[in-house]
Image (cartoon, rainbow, N blue to C red; front, side, top):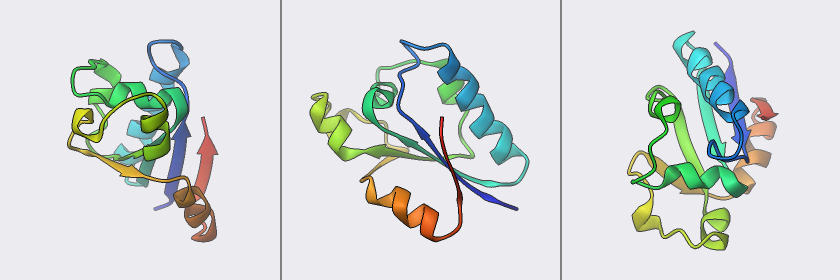
Length: 106
């Protein structure tokens, strides 16, 4: 079982490829791998409680993190973020690489 740390910076509202990246995360998790999806830059727009993206809702086996700086830069309050998504900072990318996780910027 491998550990994957995936980074998504695009919004599913702007790029149809993001849906495929969510599917990749889900497929890896369903195959028994440990998967973390870290949302940064415009990727954070999907974290709002009122945002509805079907493919994002299928990530129940994936650990979901959101960059707290990207949230602040886009005026999104932590209270607006879905409860299953945890705030984090970019230092986690370095930590994931140091642990030998497979890090992929999607």
